[in-house]
Length: 257
Image 1 (cartoon, rainbow, N blue to C red):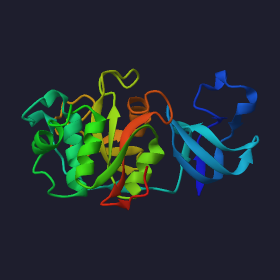
Image 2: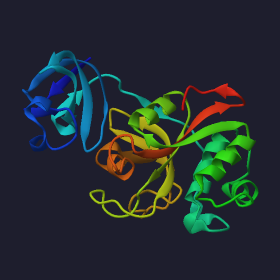
Image 3: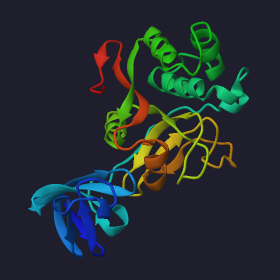
Image 4: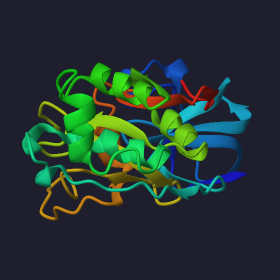
């Protein structure tokens, strides 16, 4: 596998600005083609690249995404997850994004479990607590034989692994404000696929196509990794993403968690 460095760039041991790093934690890389072992998307517009040979004492570096073109590992996944809009929910349509999102995953994993997101809310959420409570949905899934875990330390690698194993992921994002300064109390969407070559994840967004929502159909929307999900999902930096991983179905482990 190879990577093409398009222009002189600064390799860094973190995604912090180069000027803030000590000399031993950064190195200049000239344009050219380099052998690499692997690469993945990181935060703040960077890619995490493991080179075949060490450079300035390190093998793995953070590289500004616009300065490097990594080949290989062109993954395209798009799971056929049913879509529910929260806008037509019978109750609390303005705040039931989590209900609609979890209902999508439930009917993907176990088709026909509920007839709609409204049924999921009325029978499996409302009697047990608030729709915004992650624990309520954990318990609801458990009653259908689905074990899952809610975590606040996820990263893009977790999304990729889950999709590769065939499981969509519910995540929480900040959907208000510009991408440079996202805000709001949080919004729940479903990650249903990815195209690594394009640098996007596919989402079923129950509120519509974000993050302007001019289009209210949020089925299979492309959300860029950089500079969208890295800022709206990984709000506090690497490994700070909120989301739910499916850990077992009817007692059979998924390999996640």
